[in-house]
Length: 306
Image (tube, rainbow, N blue to C red; front, side, top):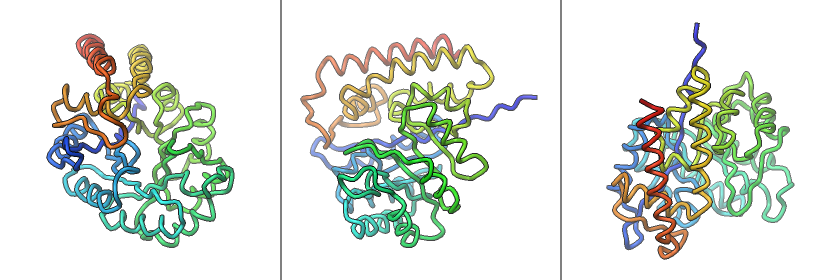
């Protein structure tokens, strides 16, 4: 009897803009449909890929409300970008008012600025008291402006509260991922890997799925990997190798290159505009990388996935 269980995909959402820099809601509606057509278990709105550090609080709330009202799958959201504890709690309450299915806490905001090694738990306790009691919570180890990884002790304490359901893991270390999965085993707190290189190993170790930026380019290939990880080892290993090679592009000019893909290849966007970085940084070479990667992805679709 097969023990196969397909793992879930939670894409980190881009925010499309018009060429004038305003949120492009018709493009966002097309993007939501594209994610769902390509197998999203849920959507992660208002994250770093969404350019939340360059959106006003009003824009973040409106963004989450729009995604929630147009999606046919669960929607989770972060969006607290302030440093002060009271300001963060106020932001989180505003985000919660938009109705996401879970409120995701950015780990580097849970420690005092400049004190990365300080415990997160005092701030987590304050949020537990202030957040809606019926809304599940989660963690996002956002790498900007610095990455603050959750310790195993913090993870165990949070799992014990029964309030946490989702973790976007960005440690990029399969040994640590395995230790985290050991801590979470038997709880409803699910770990989603954000790192492509360790993805297949983490699925085999018990990770619930993937929540990484590369799904903004070829989500269907990740869907194929999460569907065959335990039934077709050769296919899974081959997909893993290609996906790891492809993922190097995220070090180039992301999210502009992903927006270029959504604009020129998927035809979901009307512009590759980002607030994060100037348009001239998306050089002809970076654009050609996106096109070449698409040709390689098409080769996989025509051979390995048929």
